Image (cartoon, rainbow, N blue to C red; front, side, top):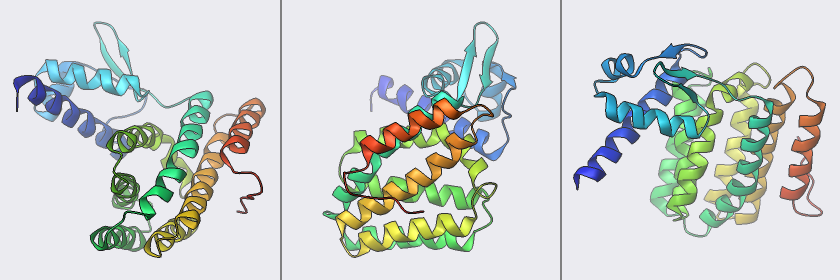
Length: 240
């Protein structure tokens, strides 16, 4: 591994650590953190920390304030519409593709992650970590690593807002039912059913996030529904 590759790997690891800290509430939304402070927190020098913060700024998790540090931020309503729309366009067809190439080992790993979600149905950190691993496993099984990385970044950017939807706006049981429909279809190698189940799940989550993104959100909801019409094939109805 070259020095350049090692540096890239280090900054990516720190970015992942910072994302995890934000999701766990160890880094607080709205608070400004200096590179030095974050370096001490994660045991790294300022250079990889700064590079990690630039990555996180690109996906909207932090805002860089020159000579001061980075402030943890959440998505505004438009940002949520854009991120959810991208997930809706990308993830369902990727799920259908995965159904054609999954292995028995993938089946075991999917079931293991789902069982963790089922046993940790308190909407706590372990539940959401298993949720994230399950989605990532499905995407990576399809063989398109770049697509998996893009969707992973979209999910991570939505993580702060997504945690608000479960259990505040929908029961954990509903989310579990959605995930089981996806896993069950994949276990049966039914690509069309897996695609529909993933689309329904993302639509439900996105609809909740957009609807509750702000008090005056009629325009955002209308924009979100236009993207839904584009993403959902003619003749298919999503029944929640």
